[in-house]
Length: 136
Image (cartoon, rainbow, N blue to C red):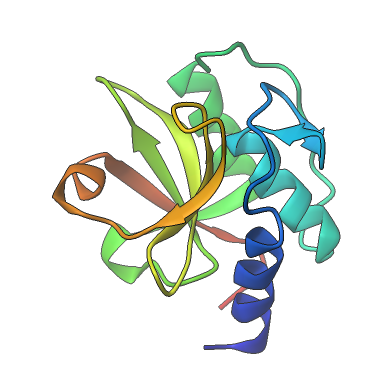
């Protein structure tokens, strides 16, 4: 795995166990968007920040922000260090960083940042994939 991709995964893993907190950006708590943001900030991949979303983000607004701040890629081309855009119901509104083991994300159902494999249920939630700008 490319060094920067491994750095993304390693940084995301350093947040494992941090409590879920809506709009959080610190070790006291982080949400799924916040995890992607803090990893990007830590590695100098982006300085983007937003708190302009509710507990259930607007898929339209989220899609516009993702398209502006990241590079949309085919799901089949996604690699560790890239980001999945996922849904729990009809529309996508959740982000997860892809790892060599599956995904790393802040998940409100387990109340913390977690890493797990992608089984059929999780695979069916993937609606899109994104790459940090400047990452090959």
